[in-house]
Amino acid sequence: MKKLVVLFTLIVGAFAFFSCEDSDDVSEEPHLIVKFQFDSNQVRLNNLGQPAAIPSGHAAQSPDFSKISAHYFELAPTAYTQLTEGTVLYHADETTQGGSVAIDFSKAVVVGEGEAFLKIPLSQVAQGNYEYVRVSLSYQEYNISIRNNGADYQGKLASFVGYNNYITTHSIGNNSFPVNGNRLQGYWAFALNNLPYATSGQAPAGATTVPNPIASTSPIPSGSCVVTGKFAQNLVINGNETRDIVVTLSLSTNNSFEWQEVTSDGKYEPSIGENVVDMGLRGLIPSFVK
Image 1 (cartoon, rainbow, N blue to C red):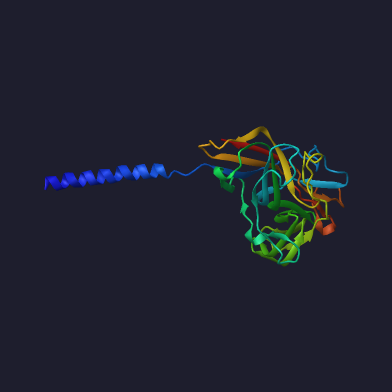
Image 2 (cartoon, one colour; image 1 turned 90 degrees about the horizontal axis):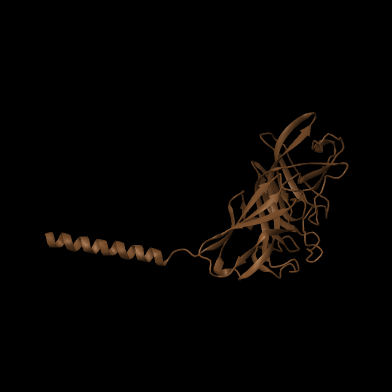
């Protein structure tokens, strides 16, 4: 009997040893992980990446962001790297279901602040020395304040800033917005919190701010939302990484929701004809941790 106990103990010990060894052998390879961050105190930029004030006759507020999506992500070595000629790591699904080519919103990856938007094995990322990030934002969801008849209300706005968006039906809370077609950059929908009111509209063509500090050397197409930002220190990928690299894309929400005022009180009041003119994010500062 003692011999059987000893034999059983040896077998269990050997199994545990080889199990641990196998676990070590299949350890997960390192990844490039991309996350978003929202910062209402980050500098407010214009299309050329220069500090921008709110224009006369307009007003703006810094929305409380909850969700975001993008349809394109690229690492660019220099300010002279043309769009698509860097290392393109993500391009979301598109469709012609609505006629012209558009982002397929039904397949969009929508995330909150600090959640992983992309997770790519580093073995699939080209080795290089990268100075810039280019990300094409497509969808934003946030809370804003509106005024009606002297009272202020809170509501949620869904903002489609991609170049062209194919949408079936999207929702804000219990409010559904059937579209079943393409909507160009600037389409938005809004619903009051806890009140039965919802509406939608379209910002003017070409009015969405898309900061690009290297516009003079590497321009972006008109109507796109490819925001460009520069690392404080170049991101170097050499193929010898053993740990994840986490890239955080800090987006300026500093007065990013802008409208044309009818009553100059700094309050967004659509019921008196105050129209949205710009929903573009106001800058990108990328950083990384190895």
